[in-house]
Amino acid sequence: MKKLIMAAAIAAAACGCITNVKNDGGDACLQPTVVKDIVHEKYEVGTAPVTGTEAISYINLGWFQIKWGASATHIADRAPIGKVGLFGKTPAQLAMNGAYANACEQGSCDSIVGSRYKIKKEDYVVFGTVRCEATGYPAKLKGVELIENKTPCCCK
Image 1 (cartoon, rainbow, N blue to C red):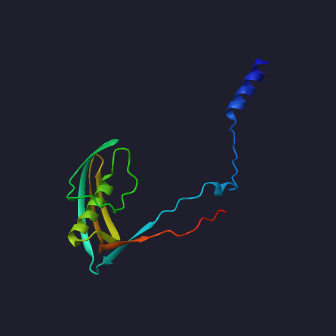
Image 2 (cartoon, rainbow, N blue to C red):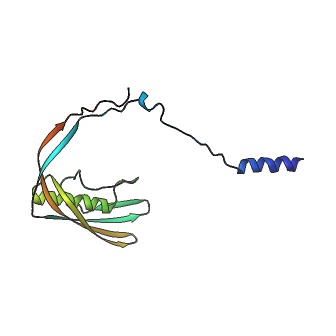
């Protein structure tokens, strides 16, 4: 009898539970969405492409990296950074950001349209270097336009 109870307990512990949750959206209109006004930025885009480069060196210590060599004097807020890890940005992300910022500085512009990146990584297990070149068309911010939301709520 003890073996039967023990086998049943093990079988019950090994079986998983499945929960099915069904939502048909019947109470969706009870919480209306809040729609805010939209700010539309107006840019003037140049015709000659600009290029910026950046090189980052690093020492890889397992979960931690020591990085140096950035020549960018500021951070580009529109550069494609991606997900930042537990210990900060990766060397490739820093190189992309620096190349984007240097290209903006070279073109005397606020942003770069149609940006393309060439990344070259030299990795020697403990030591490595990442070089990035960003190319795109310079865009200068000429103004902003506030677009007011006048959409009525669909719920009645």
